[in-house]
Amino acid sequence: MKVIRKTDFGLLKFKDITAITSKVVADALGVRHGDLMRNVKKAEKYLKSHYAELRSENPHFNPIFEDYEYTNKRGRTYACKLMNEDAVKVLIKVVDTQEAFNYFVKLMNEFNKMKMERIARQEVINPTKTLNSLLSILQEMLKEELPKSKKPELIFVHVQNAINGAVAGKNKKLNRELLNHLELEEIDYLERLFIARIVARIPLGFTAEQIRSDVLDLAKELKKI
Image: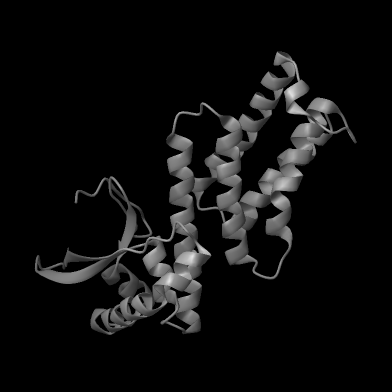
């Protein structure tokens, strides 16, 4: 497989998947690669015995543990494992130190940011679908950062209320099927504003909470219109 792009965090973007090597994970955790590979084997065994359960929780669950190679500074090549996002989620279940947990939270956010970038690069034919996709990913990132908070659940509500309020006025319900073309164009414009606000912050290393804060600032600005 040909690497299309490598991020500063160590993620590798291929044509069909985004993944990370076991070597990068081991270095980030400050452990020997051989020790981490033993955990990878435990994760693969865990996957075999719990696959049906994990698949039932997420129909799109598709973990990939693929044989790969890395080259050290001396030019020597060694075996490692290439893991996509779902594979890393399985690995998390067998690596239970607090240090590892903190790293994996950041790693999951990096995977989510890559998904955001992919969505943003696509031709925006349907801004509503694009915005909803970005908000869904942001919601998942917030759940990782703020597991006990209700903030992730409310992000959709805040954005939709801001857009609906700007078009239909405060305290009015918006039925898009009854809108004229000018009102639909206004919704299109406002959705693109939110898309731009989110996408602009992805390469800057913003946390999910910081992105959420900026999104809510825009929502408040719209409510003043």
